[in-house]
Length: 304
Image (cartoon, rainbow, N blue to C red; front, top):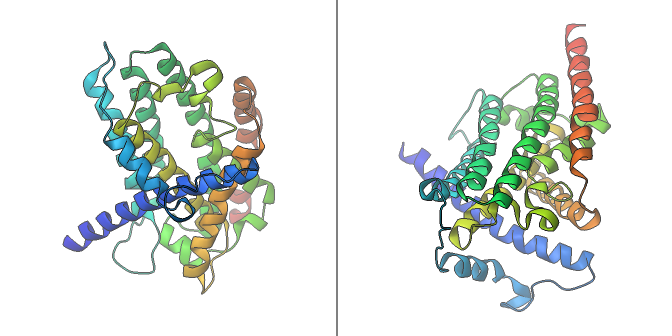
């Protein structure tokens, strides 16, 4: 019990530290995409910029909107952060300190709960902009979650396992069997995490800042941490279920996660925001039929 608790605490601390410096990496990448330097004033090369941002956010005054549901307003960021950190329990390891036999099912359950944090944050704010952003985020997340999970089942059936550790240790590059599937999966993960160009939960042009418009200081930081922890986890899931693992996997694995997470940043810097009706049409009329065909294909391959 003590070992599990220690491992869980260390995992959460490592994820929070990775998220902090991932924000610095994002600002640096977007800076160079836009032909500027990015953060470079706080210490050497701006290394301590995430620490300064964290201190600034968590010492700011906590403001509660008048007329908001105060309990839900405080609960929503905490709920989102707990879900964002708890899913990292599935992180594959070569050490036998944990084993989740149906880890893929647990991932499905936790991922499906993420939408409730967004809905609670938008509804509890008592703001029409926040509520409209929460509704759009909920519809988008639920829609793309269907195709994303179907594609993940394709890889699970090909690898004949629902365990993250087995897929990590004995997997093979599933992406080479159906390369367009990897593109559809990556697009679905971008939409699932509400990232640009699919960030309709935070459309500045029409919703100011979306579902988190009324949140500031530490509460906003918790929503921010939950979103970026989800991005890093999706990058890790892509590496486990779609890329190859070798005897040097403990070296290649972090590099693969870093490369995929940088793709999230480059997509944000390269493409403008999509149109919302086209986004939903892309899911239901393109990605979902493709996912169902891919899953039917793997069923035929297994039964033959």
